[in-house]
Length: 154
Image 1 (cartoon, rainbow, N blue to C red):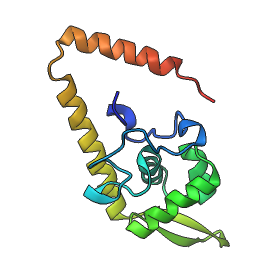
Image 2: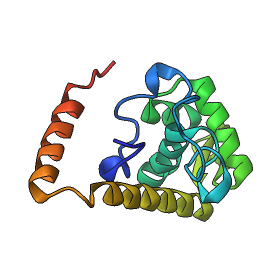
Image 3: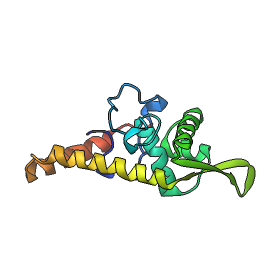
Image 4: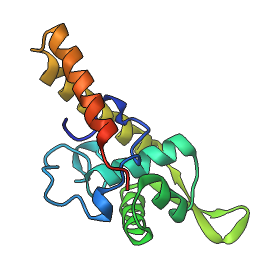
């Protein structure tokens, strides 16, 4: 299935981030997230979108919390956060419970980027499935669910 998918909305950290490696070379080009342009999240592909989706779903979090939620190590999370802050999708604020730490908060621009990216992905999937018969869709769904269930969870 193409990057993301109908169930990708708020569950982006479930399968990790390619074992902690970057998404370079995985065909994430053009108007897809990860290239900053076209309203998509900054950074690289899936992890950048998962960062914003995690903040949208779970509210303000620390960099460490976000790293765990999206399945990347802390240095990678820090780089993704920095790119998101520079793009205006996330802002840092002092943690009210510990002024030595900062918390990350998704901005309205970040929410818009998540929504637009997921909308584009959903439309692409609908286009790809348009020529499938109902029986083919059912079979594809069954096989995809089986594939996802068998996916290794490190």
